[in-house]
Image (cartoon, rainbow, N blue to C red):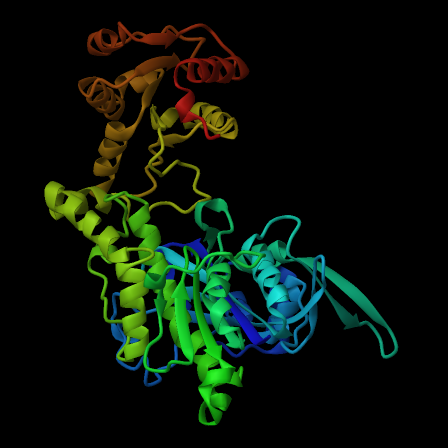
Amino acid sequence: MIKTVKLNILIPLQYEKSDYSKTTEPNLQLSKEQINSLKDSRLYDSSEWFHYCFRNKPLEANYQMINSPLLNDDNYCISRIEMDSVVRSLTGLHKNENTKYILKGKKDIEFRIGKLRILFTKSSFAFLHIEVYASELPEKDTLPFLNMFGQINNSQPRIEYRRKISKDEEETVKINFKDIILTLINLQSYVPLYLYRNRITPYFQICLVGTCEQDKKLMFFDSVQSLSKRASMREINTSHIYIGKEPYISRFTGDRTFCLYGDIDSCGEDNIDFITDIKNGLTKSATENYTSIYAFLIALHLIATKNDIYDNDTEYLISAPTRLSDEDNIREFYDKCIYENCWKLKEEISDVRTKIQIIGLDSIRQFVKRWEGAPKENSNIYFGKSPFLFISYAHTDKDIVYPIIERLQKKGVRIWYDTRLRPGDEWPEEIGWNIIDCALFIVMLSDAAVLSIHVREELNMANSRHKNLFGVKVEPLKDIKLSPGMELQLSISQMIDDALSEDQMVDSIFSIITTKYPELIEK
Protein backbone atom coordinates (compact mmCIF):
# COMPACT_ATOMS: atom_id res chain seq x y z
CA MET A 1 0.00 0.00 0.00
CA ILE A 2 1.26 3.48 -0.90
CA LYS A 3 0.24 5.81 1.89
CA THR A 4 1.20 8.97 -0.01
CA VAL A 5 2.33 9.68 -3.56
CA LYS A 6 3.34 13.19 -4.53
CA LEU A 7 4.21 14.16 -8.08
CA ASN A 8 6.25 17.27 -8.76
CA ILE A 9 5.62 17.63 -12.48
CA LEU A 10 8.23 19.68 -14.37
CA ILE A 11 7.45 20.77 -17.92
CA PRO A 12 10.37 22.34 -19.87
CA LEU A 13 9.72 25.81 -21.25
CA GLN A 14 11.89 28.35 -23.01
CA TYR A 15 12.06 32.09 -22.54
CA GLU A 16 14.34 35.04 -23.23
CA LYS A 17 17.20 35.02 -20.71
CA SER A 18 17.13 38.80 -20.65
CA ASP A 19 13.71 38.56 -18.95
CA TYR A 20 15.16 36.81 -15.89
CA SER A 21 15.36 40.05 -13.87
CA LYS A 22 11.61 40.56 -14.31
CA THR A 23 10.96 37.34 -12.41
CA THR A 24 12.82 38.63 -9.34
CA GLU A 25 10.99 41.95 -9.10
CA PRO A 26 9.41 42.69 -5.70
CA ASN A 27 5.79 41.62 -5.35
CA LEU A 28 3.26 44.39 -5.94
CA GLN A 29 0.30 45.14 -3.70
CA LEU A 30 -2.62 45.97 -5.97
CA SER A 31 -5.94 47.46 -4.95
CA LYS A 32 -9.28 46.01 -6.09
CA GLU A 33 -9.67 48.96 -8.43
CA GLN A 34 -6.29 48.28 -10.03
CA ILE A 35 -7.08 44.58 -10.41
CA ASN A 36 -10.46 45.29 -12.03
CA SER A 37 -8.80 47.80 -14.34
CA LEU A 38 -6.22 45.18 -15.38
CA LYS A 39 -8.94 42.65 -16.15
CA ASP A 40 -10.98 45.15 -18.12
CA SER A 41 -8.05 46.48 -20.14
CA ARG A 42 -6.49 43.00 -20.66
CA LEU A 43 -2.97 44.31 -20.16
CA TYR A 44 -1.48 40.83 -20.11
CA ASP A 45 1.98 42.16 -21.02
CA SER A 46 2.15 44.52 -18.03
CA SER A 47 4.24 43.97 -14.91
CA GLU A 48 1.10 44.64 -12.84
CA TRP A 49 -0.77 41.74 -14.42
CA PHE A 50 2.27 39.48 -14.02
CA HIS A 51 2.44 40.28 -10.31
CA TYR A 52 -1.30 39.82 -9.94
CA CYS A 53 -0.99 36.30 -11.36
CA PHE A 54 2.30 35.33 -9.71
CA ARG A 55 4.26 36.25 -6.64
CA ASN A 56 7.97 35.83 -6.17
CA LYS A 57 8.66 32.78 -4.00
CA PRO A 58 12.44 32.42 -3.52
CA LEU A 59 13.97 29.00 -2.93
CA GLU A 60 14.30 28.22 0.76
CA ALA A 61 17.76 28.74 2.23
CA ASN A 62 17.49 25.65 4.45
CA TYR A 63 20.42 23.62 5.69
CA GLN A 64 20.45 21.48 2.53
CA MET A 65 20.57 24.48 0.18
CA ILE A 66 22.16 27.32 2.15
CA ASN A 67 25.43 27.22 0.17
CA SER A 68 23.97 26.01 -3.12
CA PRO A 69 24.96 27.97 -6.25
CA LEU A 70 21.28 27.77 -7.22
CA LEU A 71 20.71 30.29 -4.42
CA ASN A 72 23.97 32.22 -4.38
CA ASP A 73 25.74 32.14 -7.75
CA ASP A 74 24.74 35.11 -9.93
CA ASN A 75 25.23 32.98 -13.05
CA TYR A 76 23.26 29.95 -11.86
CA CYS A 77 20.70 31.05 -9.28
CA ILE A 78 17.10 29.95 -9.86
CA SER A 79 14.14 32.28 -9.56
CA ARG A 80 10.79 30.85 -8.51
CA ILE A 81 7.32 32.35 -8.86
CA GLU A 82 4.09 30.94 -7.49
CA MET A 83 0.52 31.41 -8.68
CA ASP A 84 -1.73 33.22 -6.22
CA SER A 85 -4.69 31.12 -5.11
CA VAL A 86 -7.25 33.62 -6.39
CA VAL A 87 -5.89 33.22 -9.92
CA ARG A 88 -6.12 29.40 -9.98
CA SER A 89 -9.71 29.76 -11.16
CA LEU A 90 -8.40 31.27 -14.43
CA THR A 91 -7.03 27.82 -15.27
CA GLY A 92 -10.31 26.10 -14.50
CA LEU A 93 -9.09 24.81 -11.13
CA HIS A 94 -10.67 25.50 -7.76
CA LYS A 95 -8.86 28.26 -5.88
CA ASN A 96 -8.56 26.06 -2.78
CA GLU A 97 -5.55 23.70 -2.82
CA ASN A 98 -7.40 21.19 -0.61
CA THR A 99 -10.09 20.59 -3.22
CA LYS A 100 -10.51 16.94 -4.14
CA TYR A 101 -10.26 16.07 -7.83
CA ILE A 102 -11.12 12.84 -9.59
CA LEU A 103 -8.72 11.41 -12.17
CA LYS A 104 -10.95 9.69 -14.71
CA GLY A 105 -9.84 6.31 -16.04
CA LYS A 106 -10.67 2.63 -15.81
CA LYS A 107 -10.79 3.29 -12.10
CA ASP A 108 -11.43 6.80 -10.79
CA ILE A 109 -8.70 8.00 -8.40
CA GLU A 110 -9.08 10.85 -5.92
CA PHE A 111 -6.21 13.33 -5.69
CA ARG A 112 -5.32 16.98 -5.02
CA ILE A 113 -3.46 19.67 -6.96
CA GLY A 114 -1.08 21.70 -4.79
CA LYS A 115 1.16 24.63 -5.66
CA LEU A 116 1.53 25.94 -9.21
CA ARG A 117 4.96 27.43 -9.84
CA ILE A 118 7.48 28.35 -12.50
CA LEU A 119 11.22 27.90 -12.01
CA PHE A 120 13.50 30.13 -14.10
CA THR A 121 17.11 29.12 -14.64
CA LYS A 122 19.65 31.60 -15.99
CA SER A 123 19.82 29.59 -19.19
CA SER A 124 16.99 29.89 -21.73
CA PHE A 125 15.07 27.15 -19.86
CA ALA A 126 12.27 27.55 -17.36
CA PHE A 127 10.02 24.87 -15.87
CA LEU A 128 6.35 24.82 -15.10
CA HIS A 129 6.05 23.05 -11.74
CA ILE A 130 2.72 21.46 -10.76
CA GLU A 131 2.24 19.57 -7.49
CA VAL A 132 -0.11 16.57 -7.55
CA TYR A 133 -0.65 14.19 -4.65
CA ALA A 134 -2.87 11.29 -3.59
CA SER A 135 -3.20 9.11 -0.52
CA GLU A 136 -3.90 5.48 0.38
CA LEU A 137 -3.31 3.97 -3.06
CA PRO A 138 -2.80 0.24 -3.63
CA GLU A 139 0.30 -0.51 -5.71
CA LYS A 140 -1.93 -1.62 -8.61
CA ASP A 141 -3.54 1.87 -8.66
CA THR A 142 -0.30 3.79 -8.10
CA LEU A 143 1.23 2.76 -11.43
CA PRO A 144 -1.79 3.76 -13.61
CA PHE A 145 -1.99 7.02 -11.65
CA LEU A 146 1.62 7.87 -12.52
CA ASN A 147 1.22 6.67 -16.09
CA MET A 148 -1.77 8.94 -16.74
CA PHE A 149 0.29 12.04 -15.94
CA GLY A 150 3.19 10.69 -17.98
CA GLN A 151 1.18 10.92 -21.20
CA ILE A 152 -0.38 14.38 -21.36
CA ASN A 153 -2.39 14.88 -24.54
CA ASN A 154 -5.79 16.06 -25.80
CA SER A 155 -7.62 13.12 -24.27
CA GLN A 156 -5.84 12.55 -20.94
CA PRO A 157 -5.48 13.11 -18.08
CA ARG A 158 -9.14 14.07 -17.65
CA ILE A 159 -10.09 15.42 -14.25
CA GLU A 160 -13.28 16.47 -12.52
CA TYR A 161 -14.30 18.22 -9.32
CA ARG A 162 -17.44 19.56 -7.66
CA ARG A 163 -17.90 23.32 -7.35
CA LYS A 164 -20.55 25.25 -5.44
CA ILE A 165 -22.60 27.61 -7.60
CA SER A 166 -25.01 28.63 -4.83
CA LYS A 167 -25.73 27.81 -1.23
CA ASP A 168 -27.64 24.65 -2.13
CA GLU A 169 -26.30 23.80 -5.60
CA GLU A 170 -23.14 22.27 -6.97
CA GLU A 171 -21.89 21.56 -10.47
CA THR A 172 -19.34 19.12 -11.89
CA VAL A 173 -16.39 20.85 -13.55
CA LYS A 174 -14.55 18.79 -16.18
CA ILE A 175 -11.05 19.78 -17.30
CA ASN A 176 -8.35 18.37 -19.52
CA PHE A 177 -4.95 18.59 -17.79
CA LYS A 178 -3.33 19.78 -21.02
CA ASP A 179 -5.64 22.81 -21.06
CA ILE A 180 -4.51 23.74 -17.55
CA ILE A 181 -0.88 23.65 -18.68
CA LEU A 182 -1.47 25.75 -21.80
CA THR A 183 -3.46 28.32 -19.81
CA LEU A 184 -0.67 28.64 -17.24
CA ILE A 185 1.91 29.20 -19.97
CA ASN A 186 -0.21 31.81 -21.76
CA LEU A 187 -1.62 33.52 -18.69
CA GLN A 188 0.64 36.53 -19.15
CA SER A 189 3.04 37.91 -21.75
CA TYR A 190 5.25 40.12 -19.56
CA VAL A 191 7.71 37.20 -19.52
CA PRO A 192 6.71 35.25 -22.67
CA LEU A 193 6.96 31.47 -22.26
CA TYR A 194 7.04 28.75 -24.92
CA LEU A 195 6.85 24.99 -24.70
CA TYR A 196 10.26 23.47 -25.42
CA ARG A 197 10.12 22.05 -28.95
CA ASN A 198 6.45 23.01 -28.97
CA ARG A 199 5.33 19.94 -27.05
CA ILE A 200 4.54 18.92 -23.49
CA THR A 201 7.29 16.60 -22.26
CA PRO A 202 6.85 16.19 -18.49
CA TYR A 203 9.62 15.19 -16.11
CA PHE A 204 8.73 13.89 -12.66
CA GLN A 205 10.15 14.14 -9.19
CA ILE A 206 8.09 11.50 -7.38
CA CYS A 207 7.90 11.03 -3.63
CA LEU A 208 6.38 7.73 -2.48
CA VAL A 209 5.72 6.77 1.13
CA GLY A 210 4.35 3.33 1.98
CA THR A 211 5.08 -0.36 2.20
CA CYS A 212 6.22 -2.78 -0.46
CA GLU A 213 7.14 -6.44 -0.24
CA GLN A 214 10.93 -6.64 -0.13
CA ASP A 215 11.24 -9.25 -2.90
CA LYS A 216 9.10 -7.11 -5.23
CA LYS A 217 10.56 -3.71 -4.34
CA LEU A 218 13.10 -3.45 -7.18
CA MET A 219 10.52 -4.53 -9.74
CA PHE A 220 8.12 -1.90 -8.37
CA PHE A 221 10.90 0.71 -8.61
CA ASP A 222 11.44 -0.26 -12.26
CA SER A 223 7.74 0.27 -12.99
CA VAL A 224 7.79 3.68 -11.30
CA GLN A 225 10.94 4.99 -12.99
CA SER A 226 9.64 3.94 -16.42
CA LEU A 227 6.15 5.39 -15.73
CA SER A 228 4.66 1.98 -16.48
CA LYS A 229 1.00 1.29 -15.77
CA ARG A 230 1.80 -2.35 -15.04
CA ALA A 231 4.10 -4.02 -12.55
CA SER A 232 7.53 -4.75 -13.99
CA MET A 233 8.80 -8.29 -14.35
CA ARG A 234 12.43 -7.22 -14.07
CA GLU A 235 14.52 -5.46 -11.46
CA ILE A 236 15.70 -1.89 -11.88
CA ASN A 237 19.36 -1.31 -12.78
CA THR A 238 21.04 -0.95 -9.37
CA SER A 239 23.38 1.75 -10.75
CA HIS A 240 20.26 3.93 -10.89
CA ILE A 241 19.56 3.50 -7.14
CA TYR A 242 21.07 5.32 -4.17
CA ILE A 243 20.21 4.38 -0.58
CA GLY A 244 22.32 6.81 1.44
CA LYS A 245 22.57 7.16 5.20
CA GLU A 246 18.96 6.23 5.95
CA PRO A 247 18.35 2.63 4.83
CA TYR A 248 14.59 3.22 4.83
CA ILE A 249 14.83 5.86 2.05
CA SER A 250 15.61 4.79 -1.52
CA ARG A 251 16.33 7.16 -4.39
CA PHE A 252 16.26 6.07 -8.03
CA THR A 253 16.15 7.55 -11.52
CA GLY A 254 14.76 6.94 -15.00
CA ASP A 255 14.84 8.81 -18.29
CA ARG A 256 12.25 11.36 -17.12
CA THR A 257 11.83 10.43 -13.48
CA PHE A 258 13.58 10.89 -10.18
CA CYS A 259 11.96 9.12 -7.22
CA LEU A 260 12.27 9.02 -3.45
CA TYR A 261 10.70 6.08 -1.64
CA GLY A 262 10.22 6.12 2.13
CA ASP A 263 9.53 2.69 3.62
CA ILE A 264 7.17 2.83 6.61
CA ASP A 265 7.89 -0.76 7.69
CA SER A 266 11.62 -0.19 8.19
CA CYS A 267 11.83 3.47 9.26
CA GLY A 268 11.13 2.92 12.95
CA GLU A 269 8.93 4.96 15.29
CA ASP A 270 11.46 7.78 15.62
CA ASN A 271 11.28 8.52 11.90
CA ILE A 272 7.63 7.81 11.12
CA ASP A 273 6.57 11.48 11.33
CA PHE A 274 9.45 12.55 9.07
CA ILE A 275 8.36 9.95 6.51
CA THR A 276 4.58 10.43 6.59
CA ASP A 277 4.00 14.19 7.11
CA ILE A 278 3.25 15.39 3.56
CA LYS A 279 3.77 19.08 4.40
CA ASN A 280 7.12 18.57 6.12
CA GLY A 281 9.93 16.06 6.37
CA LEU A 282 10.78 13.88 3.39
CA THR A 283 8.00 15.12 1.11
CA LYS A 284 8.76 18.79 1.72
CA SER A 285 12.49 18.18 1.21
CA ALA A 286 11.69 16.49 -2.09
CA THR A 287 9.59 19.45 -3.24
CA GLU A 288 11.79 22.26 -1.97
CA ASN A 289 15.30 20.93 -2.57
CA TYR A 290 15.44 17.89 -4.80
CA THR A 291 12.96 19.33 -7.33
CA SER A 292 14.87 22.61 -7.75
CA ILE A 293 18.17 20.78 -8.32
CA TYR A 294 16.44 18.31 -10.61
CA ALA A 295 15.08 21.18 -12.75
CA PHE A 296 18.59 22.62 -13.06
CA LEU A 297 20.00 19.23 -14.14
CA ILE A 298 17.20 18.76 -16.68
CA ALA A 299 18.19 22.13 -18.18
CA LEU A 300 21.83 20.98 -18.48
CA HIS A 301 20.72 17.65 -19.97
CA LEU A 302 18.51 19.36 -22.59
CA ILE A 303 21.26 21.81 -23.54
CA ALA A 304 23.79 18.98 -23.87
CA THR A 305 21.49 16.76 -25.95
CA LYS A 306 20.82 19.57 -28.42
CA ASN A 307 24.30 18.67 -29.70
CA ASP A 308 24.78 22.27 -30.85
CA ILE A 309 27.95 23.92 -29.57
CA TYR A 310 26.83 27.21 -31.12
CA ASP A 311 23.78 27.30 -28.87
CA ASN A 312 23.64 30.43 -26.69
CA ASP A 313 23.47 28.22 -23.57
CA THR A 314 26.75 26.43 -24.30
CA GLU A 315 28.87 28.42 -21.84
CA TYR A 316 26.16 27.98 -19.21
CA LEU A 317 26.52 24.23 -19.69
CA ILE A 318 30.30 23.83 -19.69
CA SER A 319 30.83 26.13 -16.67
CA ALA A 320 27.97 24.68 -14.62
CA PRO A 321 28.73 23.91 -10.96
CA THR A 322 28.51 20.29 -9.83
CA ARG A 323 28.35 20.72 -6.04
CA LEU A 324 24.72 21.75 -5.77
CA SER A 325 24.16 20.96 -2.09
CA ASP A 326 26.20 20.41 1.06
CA GLU A 327 23.85 17.60 2.08
CA ASP A 328 25.55 14.25 1.46
CA ASN A 329 22.47 12.32 0.33
CA ILE A 330 21.49 14.91 -2.27
CA ARG A 331 25.00 15.37 -3.61
CA GLU A 332 25.95 11.69 -3.69
CA PHE A 333 22.65 10.63 -5.24
CA TYR A 334 22.92 13.08 -8.13
CA ASP A 335 26.60 12.25 -8.61
CA LYS A 336 25.87 8.52 -8.88
CA CYS A 337 22.51 8.42 -10.65
CA ILE A 338 22.51 11.52 -12.86
CA TYR A 339 26.13 12.51 -13.55
CA GLU A 340 27.77 9.08 -13.67
CA ASN A 341 24.93 6.67 -14.56
CA CYS A 342 21.46 6.81 -16.11
CA TRP A 343 21.65 10.18 -17.92
CA LYS A 344 25.49 10.10 -17.91
CA LEU A 345 25.41 13.89 -17.69
CA LYS A 346 29.12 14.10 -16.89
CA GLU A 347 29.89 12.31 -20.17
CA GLU A 348 27.46 14.53 -22.11
CA ILE A 349 29.11 17.72 -20.82
CA SER A 350 32.58 16.30 -21.46
CA ASP A 351 31.65 15.63 -25.10
CA VAL A 352 30.57 19.26 -25.54
CA ARG A 353 33.78 20.53 -23.93
CA THR A 354 35.86 18.38 -26.29
CA LYS A 355 34.13 19.84 -29.34
CA ILE A 356 34.66 23.36 -28.01
CA GLN A 357 38.37 22.72 -27.49
CA ILE A 358 38.68 21.70 -31.15
CA ILE A 359 36.89 24.77 -32.53
CA GLY A 360 37.94 27.28 -29.88
CA LEU A 361 35.72 29.11 -27.41
CA ASP A 362 36.46 32.56 -28.88
CA SER A 363 35.18 31.48 -32.30
CA ILE A 364 32.04 30.11 -30.71
CA ARG A 365 31.53 33.29 -28.68
CA GLN A 366 31.84 35.38 -31.84
CA PHE A 367 29.18 33.27 -33.54
CA VAL A 368 26.87 33.17 -30.51
CA LYS A 369 27.09 36.93 -30.00
CA ARG A 370 24.90 37.55 -33.03
CA TRP A 371 22.13 35.48 -31.45
CA GLU A 372 21.99 37.61 -28.32
CA GLY A 373 19.01 39.92 -28.23
CA ALA A 374 17.29 37.91 -30.95
CA PRO A 375 13.75 38.98 -31.82
CA LYS A 376 11.01 37.25 -29.87
CA GLU A 377 8.74 34.62 -31.40
CA ASN A 378 6.29 37.21 -32.72
CA SER A 379 8.96 39.07 -34.68
CA ASN A 380 8.22 39.59 -38.38
CA ILE A 381 11.72 38.50 -39.42
CA TYR A 382 13.03 34.96 -39.13
CA PHE A 383 15.74 34.41 -36.56
CA GLY A 384 16.80 30.80 -36.20
CA LYS A 385 19.01 28.06 -37.53
CA SER A 386 16.75 26.50 -40.17
CA PRO A 387 17.29 27.36 -43.87
CA PHE A 388 15.88 30.79 -44.72
CA LEU A 389 15.52 33.34 -47.51
CA PHE A 390 17.35 36.69 -47.44
CA ILE A 391 15.54 39.51 -49.26
CA SER A 392 17.53 42.58 -50.33
CA TYR A 393 15.63 45.72 -51.32
CA ALA A 394 15.75 49.51 -51.32
CA HIS A 395 13.93 50.97 -48.33
CA THR A 396 12.07 53.44 -50.50
CA ASP A 397 10.35 50.36 -52.00
CA LYS A 398 9.12 49.02 -48.66
CA ASP A 399 5.46 49.75 -49.49
CA ILE A 400 5.81 47.39 -52.46
CA VAL A 401 8.13 44.82 -50.87
CA TYR A 402 6.62 44.39 -47.39
CA PRO A 403 3.23 43.08 -48.61
CA ILE A 404 5.05 40.53 -50.79
CA ILE A 405 7.17 39.43 -47.81
CA GLU A 406 4.13 39.20 -45.56
CA ARG A 407 2.24 37.00 -48.01
CA LEU A 408 5.24 34.68 -48.48
CA GLN A 409 5.59 34.40 -44.70
CA LYS A 410 1.94 33.41 -44.44
CA LYS A 411 2.72 30.60 -46.87
CA GLY A 412 5.37 29.39 -44.41
CA VAL A 413 8.53 30.80 -46.03
CA ARG A 414 11.23 31.68 -43.48
CA ILE A 415 12.50 35.16 -44.43
CA TRP A 416 15.09 37.54 -43.07
CA TYR A 417 15.18 41.13 -44.35
CA ASP A 418 16.79 44.33 -43.15
CA THR A 419 14.24 46.33 -41.16
CA ARG A 420 16.88 48.94 -40.15
CA LEU A 421 15.10 49.19 -36.84
CA ARG A 422 18.24 48.71 -34.77
CA PRO A 423 20.79 51.47 -35.29
CA GLY A 424 24.47 51.26 -34.56
CA ASP A 425 27.65 49.64 -35.75
CA GLU A 426 26.42 46.10 -34.96
CA TRP A 427 23.67 46.16 -37.59
CA PRO A 428 25.95 45.75 -40.66
CA GLU A 429 27.42 42.72 -38.85
CA GLU A 430 23.91 41.35 -38.49
CA ILE A 431 23.21 41.79 -42.21
CA GLY A 432 26.53 40.18 -43.13
CA TRP A 433 25.95 37.16 -40.90
CA ASN A 434 22.49 36.59 -42.36
CA ILE A 435 23.81 36.74 -45.94
CA ILE A 436 26.42 34.14 -44.94
CA ASP A 437 23.77 31.91 -43.35
CA CYS A 438 20.96 32.24 -45.89
CA ALA A 439 20.06 29.39 -48.25
CA LEU A 440 18.64 31.70 -50.93
CA PHE A 441 19.22 35.39 -51.73
CA ILE A 442 16.60 37.44 -53.61
CA VAL A 443 17.17 41.03 -54.68
CA MET A 444 14.03 43.11 -55.30
CA LEU A 445 14.96 45.28 -58.28
CA SER A 446 13.80 48.83 -58.93
CA ASP A 447 15.36 52.11 -59.99
CA ALA A 448 15.95 52.89 -56.30
CA ALA A 449 17.55 49.47 -55.72
CA VAL A 450 19.95 49.93 -58.64
CA LEU A 451 21.08 53.24 -57.13
CA SER A 452 21.25 51.91 -53.52
CA ILE A 453 24.79 51.35 -52.27
CA HIS A 454 23.41 49.01 -49.58
CA VAL A 455 21.63 46.76 -52.08
CA ARG A 456 24.74 46.60 -54.26
CA GLU A 457 26.95 45.74 -51.27
CA GLU A 458 24.56 42.98 -50.21
CA LEU A 459 24.45 41.57 -53.75
CA ASN A 460 28.26 41.72 -53.98
CA MET A 461 28.61 39.73 -50.76
CA ALA A 462 25.97 37.14 -51.77
CA ASN A 463 27.73 36.68 -55.11
CA SER A 464 31.16 36.37 -53.50
CA ARG A 465 29.76 33.71 -51.15
CA HIS A 466 28.31 31.79 -54.14
CA LYS A 467 24.78 32.05 -52.83
CA ASN A 468 21.77 30.83 -54.74
CA LEU A 469 20.25 34.07 -55.95
CA PHE A 470 17.79 35.60 -58.34
CA GLY A 471 16.25 38.98 -59.04
CA VAL A 472 12.65 40.13 -59.01
CA LYS A 473 11.59 43.34 -60.75
CA VAL A 474 9.11 45.09 -58.48
CA GLU A 475 8.51 48.05 -60.79
CA PRO A 476 6.87 46.39 -63.80
CA LEU A 477 5.80 49.69 -65.35
CA LYS A 478 9.31 51.09 -65.60
CA ASP A 479 12.28 50.09 -67.69
CA ILE A 480 14.86 49.24 -65.04
CA LYS A 481 18.41 49.57 -66.24
CA LEU A 482 20.82 47.47 -64.23
CA SER A 483 24.28 48.78 -63.61
CA PRO A 484 26.96 46.80 -65.51
CA GLY A 485 28.13 45.19 -62.27
CA MET A 486 24.63 44.10 -61.23
CA GLU A 487 23.91 42.87 -64.74
CA LEU A 488 27.07 40.75 -64.62
CA GLN A 489 26.21 39.32 -61.18
CA LEU A 490 22.66 38.43 -62.21
CA SER A 491 23.49 37.28 -65.73
CA ILE A 492 23.56 33.57 -64.82
CA SER A 493 20.74 33.82 -62.30
CA GLN A 494 17.03 33.39 -62.69
CA MET A 495 15.08 36.62 -63.13
CA ILE A 496 11.41 37.40 -62.72
CA ASP A 497 11.21 40.41 -65.00
CA ASP A 498 7.70 40.25 -66.43
CA ALA A 499 5.16 42.97 -65.69
CA LEU A 500 3.35 41.15 -62.89
CA SER A 501 0.70 42.08 -60.36
CA GLU A 502 1.43 41.55 -56.66
CA ASP A 503 -0.56 38.29 -56.71
CA GLN A 504 1.37 37.00 -59.71
CA MET A 505 4.70 38.07 -58.21
CA VAL A 506 4.00 36.20 -54.94
CA ASP A 507 2.86 33.10 -56.86
CA SER A 508 5.96 33.16 -59.10
CA ILE A 509 8.40 33.50 -56.18
CA PHE A 510 6.61 30.83 -54.17
CA SER A 511 6.58 28.49 -57.16
CA ILE A 512 10.37 28.76 -57.52
CA ILE A 513 10.85 28.18 -53.78
CA THR A 514 8.59 25.11 -53.64
CA THR A 515 10.26 23.64 -56.73
CA LYS A 516 13.92 24.35 -56.00
CA TYR A 517 14.18 25.35 -52.32
CA PRO A 518 11.42 23.53 -50.37
CA GLU A 519 13.61 23.46 -47.25
CA LEU A 520 12.84 27.18 -46.78
CA ILE A 521 9.20 26.41 -46.00
CA GLU A 522 8.14 25.71 -42.42
CA LYS A 523 6.50 22.29 -42.20
